[in-house]
Image (tube, rainbow, N blue to C red; front, side, top):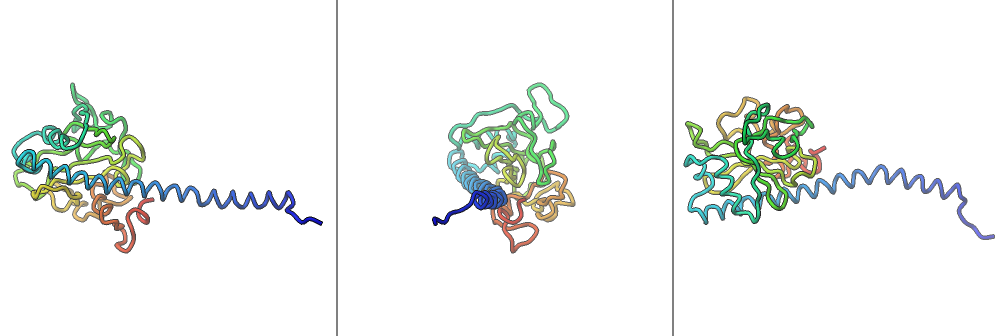
Length: 245
């Protein structure tokens, strides 16, 4: 007699395979998605610093100094974006999330969606809401904050620059694809960590406080942990594989 599998055995085997696939494939897809975002984040950070170097070479001053000299945030951003190949400038955004004036759009209307914090809460108040929204041909969004000249005591770093590393594609969440950086006196760009700047709230004295799932505002400081790939909750764990949910 020829031995073989019964129909019942085949169906049971397929069922087991289906259950295992249903349990593992979503996790594999999620890990792959985070790996892609991690790669995009590192490329964006490299591109920012290369653009900052070109800015200084082409203009004779750093982006920090340009902002310090009383130029508007939009002027600084436009000049900085000229270091990227191909950018299209959008409407200027208003710092008041509940009011749109002539020629000024709310942040969410300027980009077509409302970014969220790590907890998934939509955030109308944004850390970089004083310039136009700029969209690079690669799809990344850029905006910056107040010029340094508006502060009486100039901080060591500034102004803040916010980037969506993958454009309109989701998750449109700070800490995943939206990040906050700052220009430095030395002409580079580094992650924003809160404690080194003026006008920060009490809850932002440590970077970990503003990069967690309980922070009810924009999670400003996650770029630091994303760059070092360290969890703000446990320095022995990774940002991209352990911290992000």
